Every structure is written in C-alpha cells, then in structure tokens.
Amino acid sequence: MHSNLRILYLLATLTAVLGVVWWFQAQQGSLAHIEGTQFAIEDTSTVDKIFIADMDGNAVTLTRPAQGRLWDLNGKYKAREDAVALLLKTFKRASVQGPVAEAARPNVIRLLASRGKKVEVYQGGEQPVKTWYVGTATPSHTGTYMLLETQEGKGQDPYVVHMEGFTGYLSTRFFTNEREWRYTGLFDYPGRTLQRIEVETPEDPQNSYSLEVNARGTLRLEKVNGIALDILDTAGVQTHFLRFKKVHLETYRSRLSEVQEDSLRRANPAFVLTAWGRDGRSSSVQVHWKPRTGLDRDAEGELMTHDGEHLYGVTEQGEVVLLQRFVFDPLIRPLEELLRRRVPPVATEGLPMPTN
Image 1 (cartoon, rainbow, N blue to C red):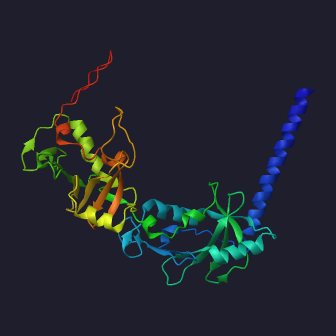
Image 2: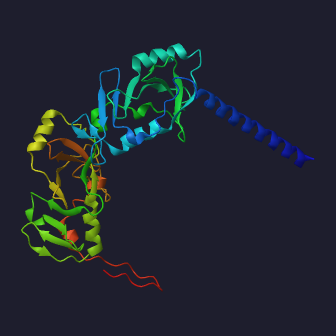
Image 3: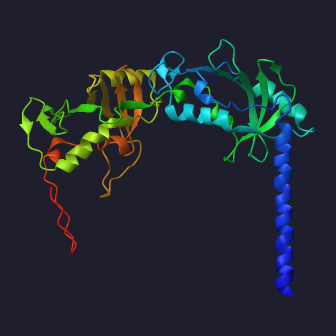
C-alpha cells in the first residue's frame, strides 16, 4: 500500500514539473513572435563592429580585423580575445525569459534611461542591425532588464533577458573601461612560431643568455657573448623555452603615481625578456622588482626582499604594468639553473629508468 502511494506521489510530482516546463516553453514560444523580443543574432560570424557606451560618457568600439584573431579596440589597441568571444556568445544565445512585471515596469524604464548601457551591433553596414539597451539585474540575479532597437525602430517594452545554459545576469559583460578591454598579451607565439628567447640581467651580464631553435627543432643555448653552452637537461630547457610562447601581464593599472612611473622608466631593470618569432617579429618587456609592502616572508620564514606576488613591467611602448610572479618567476630562471643536469627519479620496480 505504502509503495503504491509513493509511486502515486512520484507521478504527481513528475506531472507538475512537466507542466511547468511546458508552460515556460510555451511562454517563450509566444514571446518570440512579439516585436521587440528578437534579441539574439543568429550569425555572429558576420558581426564586424560592436559599440558600447554608458551614461557617464565612456565608450568603446570593437572592430573585427581583416586579418588575425584579435579585434581592434578604439583603433589604438588590441582587445581581449576572451571578452570579445563572450560578447559574441551572448549575442547568439540571448533569449527572452519573460516580460517585466507591470508593477516594476516604470522603474525599469527609468533605470534604462538613466543608467543603462547602449550596445550597437553591426554586420557590415553603416547602421547597427540591433541595439541593446542593457539595464540592471533582476532581483533574483537570473536575468537582465533590456530593451531592443532594430532598424525598424525602438521597442516600447523592456524584457527580462538571459542566456541559454547560463544562470546569472549579463550586464557585467558590457563594460566600457578601455583599459579593462585591452589585450594583456606580452608574448604571443602560437604553434611552432617561437624561434628565439633572450633573458638579460643588466646588473650581471655574465648570467644573460639566449635560447634558439633551429629548423630541426634542436635548441641552442648561448651566453650573451655568443659562446654556446652544453644543455644537460634537454627536457627542462625545452620546457623553459616554451613558457615564452604565451605570456600575459596582470593589469595595466600599475597602482603607481605618474612621478613613480617616470622614475621606474628611467631605472635599470632587473631583467629584460625578449622573444622572436620565425617571421622576425619580436616582443620585449623590462622587469623590475616590486618592493614588499608588508612583512612578507618566504618558505623559511625570512623576510622577503621583494614583493612576493607582483613585479613591475615596462613595455616597449613605455607603459608601466603589473606582472604576476607566479607567471614570471619561471621565465627569469638564472643561467646556472639551465646548466644543471636533471636528477632522474628513482625507478619503480618493473619500469625502465627515464633517461635524459
């Protein structure tokens, strides 16, 4: 008897859930035919320009380049690849979650007009194919208030918009700070395009060195004076070389004053890192120690001489940036480390001992 009741309760619950799902899908289907609800852009591969502006006068223009994968930012810089990809995915998968509640409608319209962001999407023409007016998140933080404008005109009603497969709000994706949009890559050599790297230590030139790969994939280690050195740990040196393929700074916000930045530009760097591609293109960054700001201690409990998390960098364009030690400490390995022979691990019984 109890078993039959449990089955009955289970069937009733399942029926209720399916009913809610059916109702929700029916609502979405009916909304899809209402003017002002077609937020999604089916073919984002043809989107060639995105303009985002806020009510404080900040704006960014993202333009698809004729060649290369990185979009142009305001005609001056390259834009972050991940942020552009997220925008395109949002344009493609956006859908209306539902209408704005009648009681909330006046307030939502007021906020869209006073604090909303304008997002224009272009597909080859002089006029945007769609313009999103992006407002705040809903109280549940599962949707975003938006209003749509197309080439036929501006919609009258705002809607709650979300992205299929994502729980959360979308407004934070449409930021207008140029510095936050900038591509952070210092070295970018995909595939097998990296040919040469150089680590200079101006205060100790004898520890400067370079690594270069030939057409056969063999690495050559040289001192700064061109003297070739034997590589005893082939795998370790190769790993060191490949770390330079893709290197990013943390942020363009150095947290220094203009006077401090000017002083750093004139100072001698602790290291100068340079990489060359097979096409002859090179990239370089000067690395400076960052003074510790507190009582940071190392693994032995001793006070650290420098900041334990960050370094300063000066780019080829003279910009002072912040670097992560987690990323750069492996890049500034001293020459003496590269000249060491790797100590093989103890072989496990029945397995061959790895060889260098």
